Image (cartoon, rainbow, N blue to C red; front, side, top):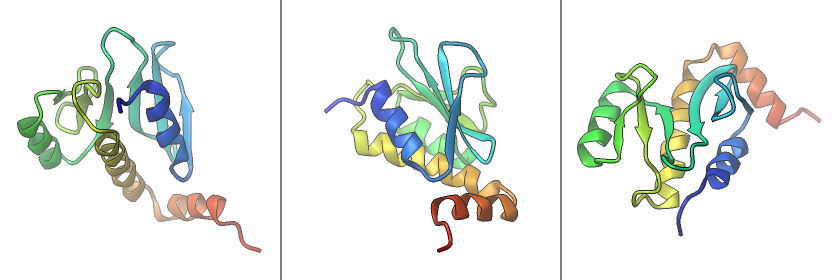
Amino acid sequence: METNIEDIRAFALSLQGVTEDMPFGDDNVVFRIGGKIFLCLSLAADNPHFALKLLPGRNEELREQHADITPAYHWNKKHWSDVFYKRGFAPDTINRLIEESYLLVLHQLPKKTREEISRLSHPLP
């Protein structure tokens, strides 16, 4: 089964507290947690990819293992990678990478923001 834009969008939005917007124009959808970007999905049909934030060492590891994971074109290349997802990645691999980026950004948020996000998904009775 091949991953598509809607699959990526649906998975990203299924994560707790995620919002989406298009601050860079009509050809990119940005996904945020606590106002911070963790995923930028290109809508260009001719070059399907997304950028995600990972730890520098993890980015290096993935780039060595996969020719279709490269330094992100318009992002800090140390912290962001482009993933060309139509080139042989299983959907569960794509979802794990997105979740890894989400968790990294989530854990970098202030404690108060993390608690607010948690309360949104688990309201008190």
